[in-house]
Image 1 (spheres, helix red, strand yellow):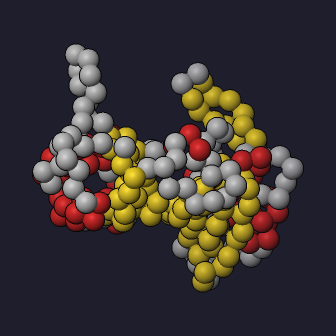
Image 2 (cartoon, rainbow, N blue to C red):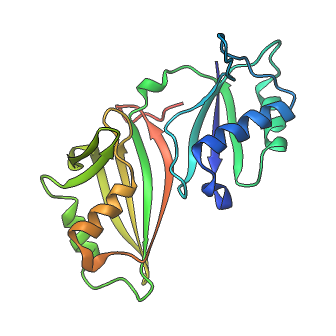
Length: 219
């Protein structure tokens, strides 16, 4: 299998995970790169994206695994052909032979940008820092089996808050992304629940990098 590192930014953040999969399948076809297919009565293209990205979230560290029929072109040629076939906002950064199983992916570094139309309320940075320094922080988690209470503190490896300007506070966090997993949006949800006086008017999330359990960059 081969692996692609790609980014999803700009207006492309509004493409759903399933549509992103279809986008790549069409891009491979337009680029003249025939994907292998699974067997059985309903063959499917052999392409998969690790850690499905929520709509509205930017990322510079998305991973896609694929396999091609026939003789493989050079990696650099695959990169160029795909980027010519993709849309603005979805760009291949690297193509390489995968060396690690996706199950080894464990941690995600991200930023959660909190924007306040009327300026950051006084004391917000210290209050939010103290919130994530608690011994436990319970939030509701929805699943196919219903809603349960989940303590998110064990899934936060580290987190810091930085004032960008008078209207913008940025959280930078390293969190679990598999077994268990924490959606970065839960960080802003925790603020809204526990500190409603510091609820932002707008939240922007960006994935920066993925790591294994030893905090080594995962590729």
